[in-house]
Amino acid sequence: MTLAVIAIGGNAISSPKDAGPGAMKSRIAKTAARLADLVETGYEIVVTHGNGPQVGNILLQNEEARAKVPAMPLDVLVAESQAQIGYLLQQALQNEFAARGTPRTVASIVTQVVVDPADPAFQEPSKPIGPTYDSEQELIVRRAKGWKMAQDPRGGWRRVVPSPRPLEIVERDLIKAILSAGDSHILIVAGGGGVPVVRRLHAFQGVEAVVDKDLASAVLGNGIGADLLVIITDVPKVALHYGKADQVDLERLTPAEARHHLLAGEFPPGSMGPKVEAALQFLEGGGRRVVITNLEHVLDAVSGRAGTAIA
Image (cartoon, rainbow, N blue to C red):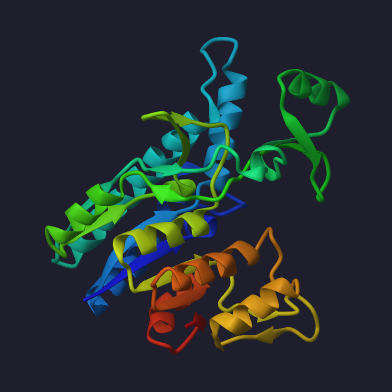
């Protein structure tokens, strides 16, 4: 049985236009159905997911209530979003398999990811999180808290935080042990890229940062010996000249071709870039194949009939 890490993008969890709980549950139910299809096709899956909109909402709630309850640090908020999304996703998967008459044990693990305290990202925060601020007074208040603010291309200002590279999944051995106990177990791990932690002597300590979900998924996949990494995003295929009149959709890429296009600037840092980086890291670490596609085409993509394959 092929072990696959399935990295779910934010759009498979909630719509940018409607982040309400009802819409979120509906979107997650559809995602669970496609994941169940993969399992029924013969794949053993470990699921990771993004948390961008969700952790931004939690951050906003945190700020609005700070006069009444103590504000929590960012690493705790990432853990909170892991539990929130993990609960909804595991319940949706449990319900989907039960409806098909093939019950499965599904569990979410609040996952820590080791990062390097000397990572240059800590000196150059670049990852936008939370709401957009428009007024000068709001900016003054946020900067007084020590926040690094950057202009959003769409207007206004947003807080930016470090996004260091993931090095190791702390709970890797636990994940491997659960998987080895039987292929009826499905795990949801490393949500939002995992909670970033650094080692201080013999202890772990959370840090104010966020980790890229796709890069963390590559580290996870290599750590548990996965054969396949499936990155579910909002486009059916990787493309050259994306969004332009001469756009070229790509069905297959070698690692060398993918790296060439990445270095040529075809895959921007804020969109497809980290996904292609994650694909290359996974393949260099022993993975056999990476598929990038959207939720609608994921079943055909793993069978080679859709999406973009890198191998």
